[in-house]
Length: 635
Image (cartoon, rainbow, N blue to C red; front, side, top):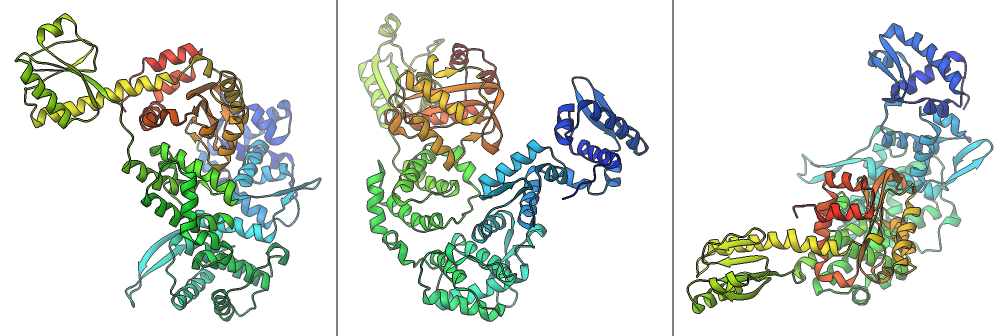
């Protein structure tokens, strides 16, 4: 890529860069152009003169930055190719991926940065994202960088790119009345997925499914459809999979029939290596692949689940086994599955998601299959349903009964409470005089006479405790349990030695190492916790907004606690962005009965932006504990 660095072109280049940013600083322009501050200043003078005729002003304010004001749209429309500078991060990264896929010779990083109107550091972040998200491999030489993925890997990249960016809908066929899936291919994908080829493949799969009476769900159907559509186009362009990339495999009669249909439609012969790779996709689609016969026997998988789940019932075992058979196949072959609710599942069902992560690690160790976050979220749903069917014993609320009409009436009221309200401990029944002499410390006072107390909730009821009073008592019990008991349980997990305020660390791995080392030094976790937490980060990011909640396996927790680290400067959390507050969750079975309540309180906390901001700016561990102690949250 040859770039003209004449003064005029460089002036236009800097102008485009300024248009793409709301505000920049000299250091940004120096990095973008590789010019000195003095030279940048001279070019800004030229920019200022050039843009004046478009009613645009260049503003240079010390301490504030450099930016443009005025008729920016008019200026933008006058500069060819300037629209590229307005792209979002996602759009730019997709364009960068497309550019790399079509690159015929190596390109220098600086040339790429200039091409996409970004700084070199932004380009490097984009490349890292493509490596992590799509599995892009780059070859670096003196001439620059180029894609280093083989044909099989390129197709996997294209498949993931397609499934993440196409749109689909159901339309009714006016002739048959049947519903038909309609896929809309974005323009930038049409170079790899031809809509006409896609339509032909859809018809072939209909005929194939009818022949073998296959009723596949969307997670089985879409990967096969995308793979064939991409493969047919690549084969027509004489871009083949290397025979060495495919292990020894026998082509099944079903796959051979599908190959025959495709060869008839596309008028070319499908090579053997391509046929073998197609066999893998048909295996998931048809659910009849001998290499996975140990998984197809749901009974054997169920037995394995029994050995690796701490609690289960028949419904959970059946649902997980049914889900895992195709999920393991997808994972074995690197197929992606869509789950639009994955983030919501992580947030709403943290206990179940954590259980699913534990199971995923066991699966990875036993079956040598890495399941992506979307699959983990689906497992979490099954585990959440199990948790709902078998709730843990809730924290109890203490209550004293005060009655003025005698022992018999008090006992009647006591019995009504026992029958009507769960999770309440009645510490006693007392007369008014006894209560006045020595009132016990309880959460609620249930009284048949008017009472006023400052720090204890008092409910005045009739001796027979009617239904309205029962409902009120239940409501108050819930409030007490949430606002007092859960708060107390949460605070019990906090220790000054487990809190690091305003850390200077800026790297995710360093933060996890620092926190786990601190917890290990004080006897809360073992030495393997850091590795366990970092391994989990590879499975699913723990970033939620400006907060991260890393955690490792519960087997490495010696005493439950909650580690906290704050950073006003910010911590880079992979490509997901920066966080300012890190909660390291070190919970184990000792908290089993309180786990749901603690997580509910915890997620109520991290949603409270005011408290989060105060925590980030707290100067010491003691200040953080005091702030949390005095916080009032609605759970």
